[in-house]
Length: 319
Image 1: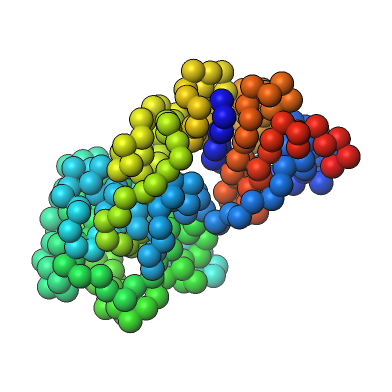
Image 2: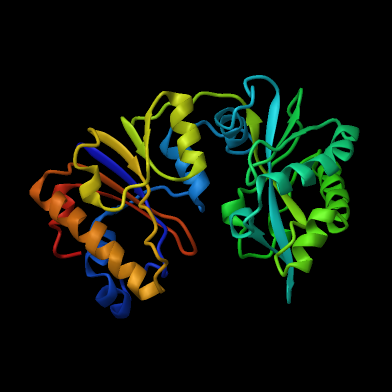
């Protein structure tokens, strides 16, 4: 393989200088120490956009690409992701749980979205909910608006990440009205009565107009809707998330991949050990043998890491 861009979420914070981390993941620690630091966005969605050569507008414009992948005619106008979330009150304000933690059924999503249509139309937006996890707002023209991807907000207080720009106040008013409508919606009342988290908020992000990415990949192997949408827009082949580096043996010359999470979910130490065995040890061997000629190892999170590693760099024992 000529080039592999591996975007991987770690169950623990990566710190190759920490002896405890180096004992848990010696091969990963070696890769991080010996690679050259690369430019890195804070979250997975932004990193995926950059990897696929998508040009940033005010936002990374994932909404129109995801909307098209979800079956909407997204080539005209401005699109904004509007993802259902659960908002919780913490000591320092509100924080968000993303929709994939809510097990929201399609019929629930349809009913909730229908209850919000009139409020959205009154503000000049058209609301679509083609999937339970990904909803969209559409407007004929781009507003003055900048937002933060949901993956950079999940688990953090949302106040520093709220929309900015001349149109932000109007959008926030709509989102506040949506929260009130969701609070009293029969779907949420039934969910709460059953002991399930309600959908009591919406997160707006990824706005932009349609533009085609210019990737350098032959294949995108990922379960992430954003990576699959980018690949589809660019005409790149798509495959399921690989369970191991071995699964990519015949994947092509230039590959973007995100490992499949271990199943059943492991505790952090076990999860890291699984990634060591299935990914990081084989990656270091492949680099040293020269069967992998270039690796971009991308680890989003807090802190985040991004390094470029070639076979020559993999042998830099003094680092």
